[in-house]
Length: 261
Ligand code: 4G0
Image (cartoon, rainbow, N blue to C red; front, side):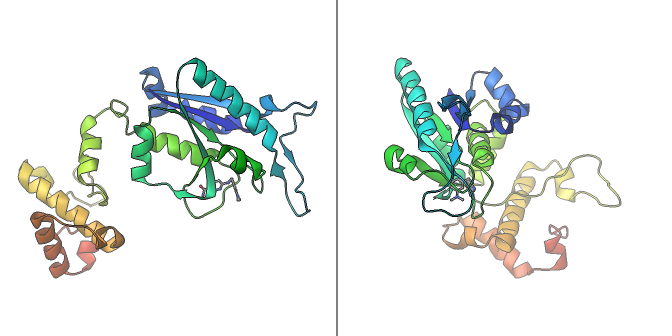
């Protein structure tokens, strides 16, 4: 079972989200366990202070180290009692870039994962010194806190756990089209505001559909994220389809999904 312990000053930013939809179902099925811990419960003063002014002055507040240490100590003790190991993650703009590969690694993790959510201008550096948490970044931008990144890590990992998504084929297909963008999807009706569906998808010709989708995925990737194709060894079929895409040129129609064929 994939287990996350989220340590946060704002439990309500996390709990309602993990209690919805697919993450809720995953927990009901016993495939995922997300526990949310209020960092204020690990403070020791009357005002339950979790932050303070920075030494040396300057704007904003800094998260205190001791409440984080106490929370991690409590979770470490609990894991030990249950004979489990622990991995501590710390969402931060200074972290290692999160990616699909990183998510896959989390999804296969046997240890409990503690996610420390920082806030304000940052956390007391001694949290890094003493805990050496794994810093992970969900992108090159700054957020008000680590809660949204925590949810991103949990969501991206959980959906890769076998049985979490309804249809195991969707994850299968996805790993097949690894690091290509998706082909376009259509559903009923066949005509929406004058817009139709590519004929091939209505043909029932499974091999033709497979090739069409593969070509569309290559086209979309070539046009929008050529970096994903740059150092990639293509199969003979992929190379042939990509050559077709390129020789057809970047027409207005190809930009709309290549409905010519
Ligand atoms: C630690 C993660 C935590 C340090 C967290 C901010 C963006 C990300 C936080 C800071 C976050 C991300 C140094 C501002 C909380 N923002 N990109 N905010 N600093 O993953």
